[in-house]
Image (cartoon, rainbow, N blue to C red):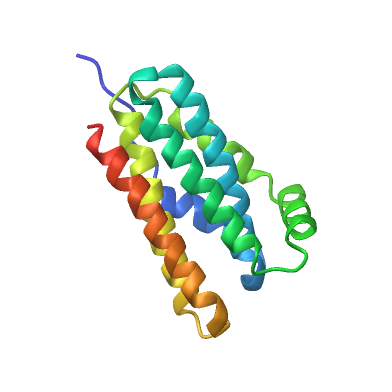
Length: 156
């Protein structure tokens, strides 16, 4: 009897990374991770042509989220580079967590990741430290995450 490895707890993995980053910069680290997720979705679209339209739409939403969040910071690119240099974990999060899982579980884990992303953007929006002008942007990012989650959950 074959056993799949246990799915990792994404909230714990991401939470450990975020604890090392100043609260004001955490959205930019997540934005950088969104761009990495977009790359992963584009790769999966090449590997699963029958699902490529939906996966490319997920990639587009990830890029849009990153653009929206980065627009809230005047020096976004420099801060992201510094954060990724100091915290390379987001570069390693996507592929190793999916190793050892066969379909449909790879779709389950990214779906959970998108739901976690939506919750994260809502948490940032609800923080008293978040400027009022940024709240709408962050809440819109949560909706984009949920669109991707719904698609990925439909692949079960």
